[in-house]
Image 1 (cartoon, one colour):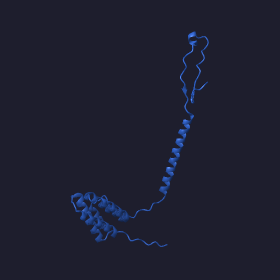
Image 2: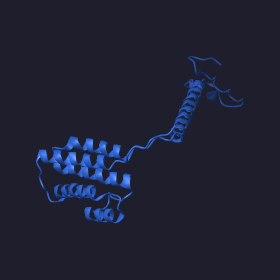
Image 3: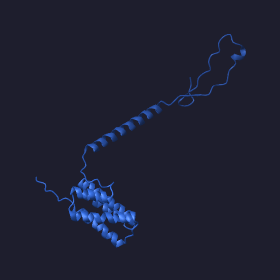
Image 4: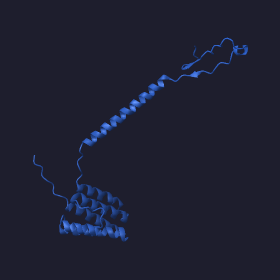
Length: 188
């Protein structure tokens, strides 16, 4: 056997059996070379599979390590103030701005006081707040004014001026700050 190039083998023609006619004894044209698969191809495929498997295992290990660490929860008042700060970027769109402020206040009430607020109407929410006594009268009235103002903008198409919206935003921040729990002293 001889080879013309790496990976190919030239096979000689099969022997002619005895007792066949003379035409069969004549030479036939040479067959084309037969391609032999490169054995290194399988090595590369196996290496790629092993690398992918190692990457997947490393990703799972890092994910489980992150899941094992307990991340400290963000306090409700800090999260509400961040949401109110983000809402301030939309102050020139009163409808969207008031929706964000209302959502921030409602989520704050749920996180801070355990009152299911996001899916309730303002009337249902205030009725529940009155029955649970989690808020004093003054913050409850401030919340009523804030949520009613949001409702007028969102549902009655009220168009407040920019100074009104800025005052409204400041009142929402003041409500969160006034209802923030006092910090507890850590005794070493």
